Length: 98
Image (cartoon, rainbow, N blue to C red; front, side, top):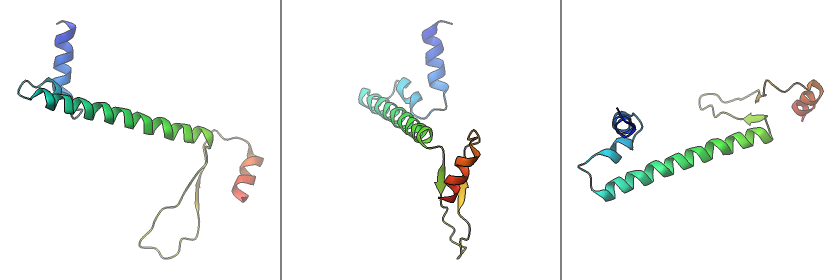
């Protein structure tokens, strides 16, 4: 099996939505171009969001989150999640006090 056959077979049988449409012979070339644009933009934006979230984590590993609870009237305790690699106990206590 040569490389082109291997790539065609994998693209036709993949579970990634949109890739099999690129190889179909019954589609017009504009439809293939449309699917190529959708795949490229989805790949770009998902990579951008992942890298943005990772950069945000690298700048500040402390995450403050409030969860909406529709069935509870009183939310008594705030939730704080801290990175497990954070080892400065004095600084952690100061941040929690803030």
